[in-house]
Image 1 (tube, helix red, strand yellow):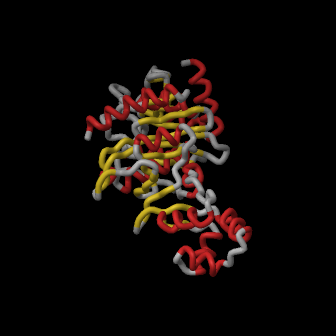
Image 2 (tube, rainbow, N blue to C red):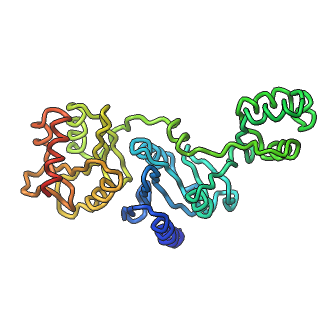
Image 3 (tube, rainbow, N blue to C red):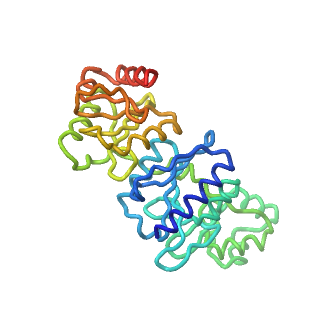
Length: 316
């Protein structure tokens, strides 16, 4: 629901500002893969707001995770409902690998209260701190068999918990009652991002100009990640961690994404450029350096291209 999205965007902006974040809201009429990009020192987020999380499609989720991986952000969907009812506070859900939580849970997360319960097939689960469980079991002089009898699960399950496997919320609560100790592992969303896979996207079928620019950038040493529903058209990366947030536009008139590209490059301290087919006298648009594909070809290599961007940025 659009009213839900607009309301939460307003509320979230207030909460982020109060906590010292700088942020941008790329306005693409709600069709962007993310609604807010935010940063506070090393804390970086890309946030999508959805009333019903079932509306997140696999392609959009993949783009969100890929952009987050490249920028080193935590991707989060803030939602309210799923097909089986309302989302619960204090629980992390996942759809196509993207972490999902309620607005209240996210605000608590910003304040240092990371959730420890997650939803998966069959119910709610908690990752067990295996070292703590083994230590307290040994302190109580309980065998694995004795604990399995007390909890009502197999010996193998107890061994798996001591190796760090997750338990159902019901089993976790039994362990807590038996040992009266903190045995939970809070969910590390940054680690979840690190463990996710990212690969070069297939080129979106737009036109020959897009394909030519992407191929040209690859030819001078960049890995290219084109996107369909982001506030930019592609990202370029290389092994030295130079990253360029790119817009691709045959004509510069009414190119709506330039302002969003400028704000995102400032927040995440990345290079930015808009590539056009035109021979234009413009050196920038909305503060973003403008190049045509001939200039990229003439640069010859990625280091020279980055140097050109740096100089254009200084002179804009």
